[in-house]
Image 1 (cartoon, rainbow, N blue to C red):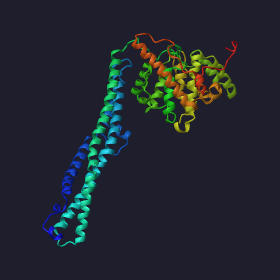
Image 2 (cartoon, rainbow, N blue to C red):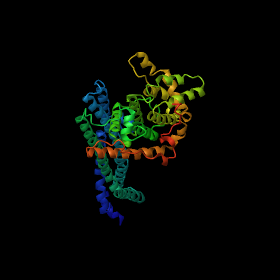
Image 3 (spheres, rainbow, N blue to C red):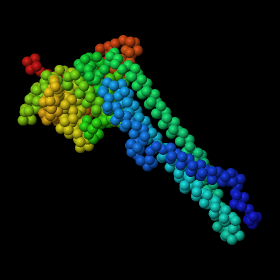
Image 4 (cartoon, helix red, strand yellow):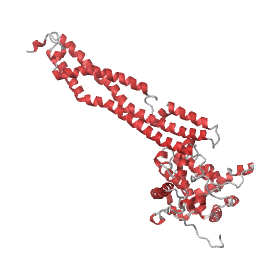
Length: 472
């Protein structure tokens, strides 16, 4: 009979299994509370922020900024500067990785632990107290109320028992996230420290082939390409990630990332995934390549002729004169300028989003494409970045389909651009690596570009409007 329970406490009314479960509730609440507070104390960023805002407040990011400010005082050839630039890039990456880790930690561990310690378990303990009170005063309580309280408390304990494995998994997830974070950081550090040591130990080694600062023709001959490596690689990456990026080519990227990308382009080991998050760095590397060419893409010889053609008032006559000057370019310069200008035209089609009109693009890229032979005089230096340069570059971009008729509609076939670039680069890099292993020079024509015939887009054709010998 029920009256037999009169002298018993609440625990005596539970089954043996539920008594064991009951004994775990209070320790579980205590563990969840303590570990939650300690984990929050381990965070280096503020809770509730997105990844970018977290990263800006991290000590690692502040260290990266300090390194960036420090290496500016060194000249470009200083080994300290080069190492600091690389360290700056690496600390930035580590800060980003840490911010992502702490966001996952908050979402997948801290939030569930807080709910467990502040909502779920306190509710069970509250029902326990109510059940204990009704058990003590059972003579004054209605049987129906007592039975309901007992049933509710028993159901809470059963629910806790079924969820205990899930609660334990919160701590396993903590370890998983820590392992992922430390593994990603370690692999990144190991790879880049090795490269940094190799680069540092071979500073000044003239045997390493370079791309930046090399004459266009000699570079194309050495790698068997029609389009220079930095132009084709950077355009390929920007086609995928940069067309809608506001201020592309206008906004500066972190110097350390640009430096890293230039080094990868020099060595032929570009990992597109590593730089895809920063299209401004890709655009910056492309600008550097154009600026560092010993002779600009539009040549010293034709410098004045470009200005003369652009000075024509009537659009039709201006385009006619620009076509004439284009035909005077060396074939390699023409092909690369066509490839670049058609990409820039494609970029300007997104001007409503990226704010880069043909005029804006001409302002920021013009001085890298067209400059005088000598910049000794202030007048020459001023003219290299004057309105005249914009007047030349802007119509090239604006009327690219008319000026380069053999390339009409090119970059709308960007997938073929990406595929061709990937295959060409695999062949090129394989030959470079094989040649180094065998201690042999890289063959001049060891890599053949993918045949243009398989591509519907004429972007990669080397053809140009034919002229008679008298025209040339």
